[in-house]
Length: 387
Image (cartoon, rainbow, N blue to C red; front, top):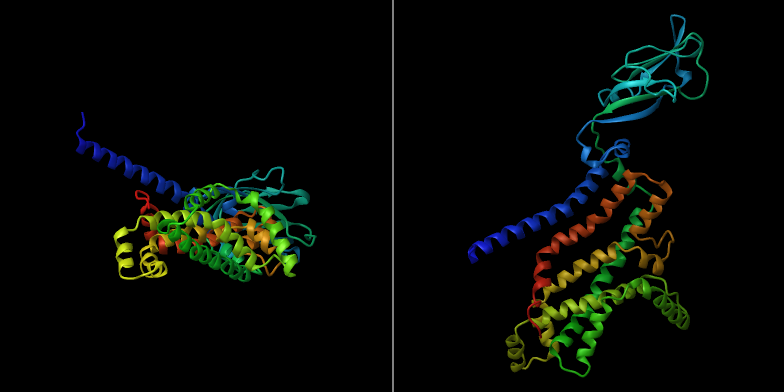
């Protein structure tokens, strides 16, 4: 039978293993997203990110040079080049089979002369060099198709990021996201801090009912309240003769949706602060506002930082509320909306999707890592004490 010391050691090992498994589960998708975002789009389309460092076999189609560039040699007309993109493309892959018809794309081994119609021939070497030969001139405005299978070496590129960042309107949308997110994070914190102090240290009628109401609001789905809220905005806007859509409207919306969690989190933390500090301040003649400003706020910074992380991540990644209260105009789109529009026009381009997704999480990651040391302290402090 295990003694208490052995039990604690076993529990410690289990806890560490559990934490390690959770870290791995959260890290693998992020790593896969980043690796996919810097891979060549052709390789990304045919293989998973975990194969990024291995050679991949791809069935591809290339075109020869334009028939206008053909040369005559020994009475035959020649089209030649490299299917990997010229001399600079050599070494990027190794041809394992080729064909000149779509019905038989792998009919010939590299280096073998493939007989075509009317005495024409095609030969493709392992390094990608090809040569079309014909006894008569090549006709047409486009190059001839070459079907081939090749073992392609891993290729990494920043072109996906250049394409996303260089897209029209990305900079404006980035500024719009910051304009929405920063006030929508600061305003709830300011209001919730006052409310949390009042609910934790001030006695007034209905205090318990207010706390219960706040806890109940935590489970209200925001989707259910969007239509009533927008109707109320429209009514107020019609009364004052202003449009309900705009930054003020979305700030207030995010403030309303974020306040229940903010008040609940900060109230639990502030209620756990030592009572002796408050009583000593009252003896020295401090009123509630002085206690709140000089004592409670400095001591509550971990809880404030914890909520700031949650609220910033929520608002930055939001698309629904931004679409409802800002709209889809070119000047109003936030970053998530802009990327959605770009992806919608491009279909299933995975390289754009992965690069866009990683760009959107860069700012939240910076915020999280800069404030994460306060996260656990802010969430756990006050959880075992009540006020």
